[in-house]
Each structure stands twice: as structure tokens, then as C-alpha cells.
Amino acid sequence: MSIDIIFKIAGIGLLVSVTNQILTRAEREEMATMVTLVGIVMVLTIVIDLIIDLFNNVKSIFQLY
Image (tube, rainbow, N blue to C red; front, side, top):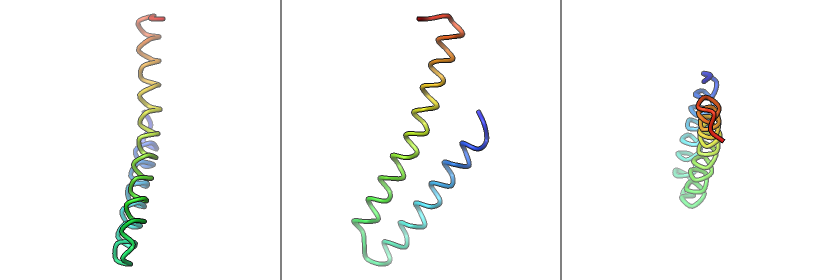
């Protein structure tokens, strides 16, 4: 696993949290919630890709088909 994936997830989290705070202070709670949900979906997409790679590696190591 490369360190750049951790930096991507941290960057998304930082960007989402700053945007969420700005929108909350501007009394746009609905938009802040949507930004948070989009951030969660982006991170979950990255994590799901990593889990798929993990399962593919396990299948190849144990020669499962």
C-alpha cells in the first residue's frame, strides 16, 4: 500500500470538513450535509477499490478461482 492513498483520504477529509464549516456558518446546513455525504462516498470508493485488490491478491496467493 502506498502512502499517497492515505494522503488522498486525508485531503478529502480536510476539504470536506472546511467546506462543511463554511456552509454551516453561512446557514446552508442542507448543502453542508450533501458535501459530507459526497466526501463519504468518495472515500468509500477508494476503500472499496483497495478491498477488491486485497481479495484479488488473496485469490492469487491461494490459487482460488
